Each structure stands twice: as structure tokens, then as C-alpha cells.
Amino acid sequence: MNARKPVSHRFLKSDRARVDAHKMRPDEYDELPELSDEMLARAKVNKGGRPLSPNPRQPISLRLPADVIERWKATGPGWQTCMAERLSKVR
Image 1 (spheres, rainbow, N blue to C red):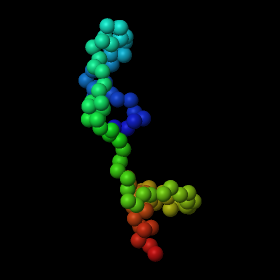
Image 2: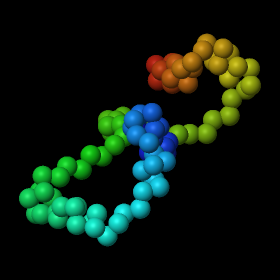
Image 3: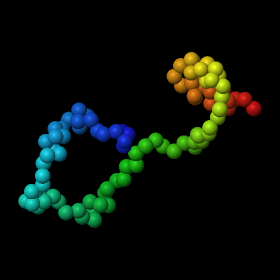
Image 4: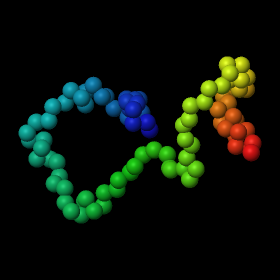
């Protein structure tokens, strides 16, 4: 899930307005368990995102004639990938 997008309440299946409106009372703090060393040892850190690529792409700035760009765009979605593949074959 993208960290920049807020999570949909339909995905969570919860009433966010009710949850957000809830204020913790002092007696509710007593119900929270104390964190032990054993609990912390079992904890897992899940790093989100895509796995690192062995051959990452590098952004560049390239000025091309407008008609060339329009012809590539006319090939449909993924035209940038097709262009990159074609350029990688040329040596």
C-alpha cells in the first residue's frame, strides 16, 4: 500500500469517525499491556516498497522532436518501456 495514500475505511471495515472521536480515559491506560523484552524480541520490522533492482533505472533529461514523442505515445501504454528496450538494443 502506498504510504502517501490514506487508507480507505472500506478496506479497514471500521467506523473511522467513531474511532477518531474516541478519547482515551485514564482507566483505559491500565488495560494496555506493558512491553516486555520477550515481546520486543519477537517484533518484526516490515519495510514496505518494492525490492531493490539489480539494474536500477536512472532518470535523464532528453530533448526530442515533438513528432518523435507523439509517434511513441501513439503506440499505447508502456511506450517509455518500449523506447528504453529499443534503445538498449542499439549499439
